Image (tube, rainbow, N blue to C red; front, side, top):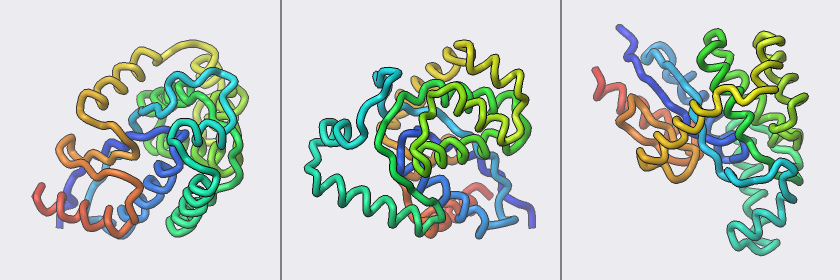
Length: 218
């Protein structure tokens, strides 16, 4: 049996907790499908807080203001996220601050175009874990450098990309493409540039949808 090729664009933001849940759930679904599909998975940029200043903001204050949440609603949302993350194998920690993620997207773009197969994906996981698991700043040059080299990306090139504005135009262009394609919320899983699976779905939902898409593609 020949594996069905699937191109998957995972449109997301490092600052999005549901994106951490969704990526883990998607990968668990892909593991269960196994040899039935041959997947090319690409990370695509989306910024939830594009005007966030370099110093960031207090997470609770920012989320209450942006979404009009009460303290009780915010606590309930956080509890639900932690529970869903645990169900999909992602451990959320305490995150008291939000930051701008544009430089993280630049680094992810670089990993996608110049890195070895799997390095962009590994960097995405490392960024999500640092931000949501450890409360670290994904805009800090030292954090970006540490995570890039941790996943095997070349140190000198990583340092040069982080210190420059390289790939900024490419990230902006990609963000515009996905906005114009109708993506308004993340995570958005786009399969073969035709099929959209929205949100941090359970792995079973991803599995069912991907199997159906693969059958249609054969």
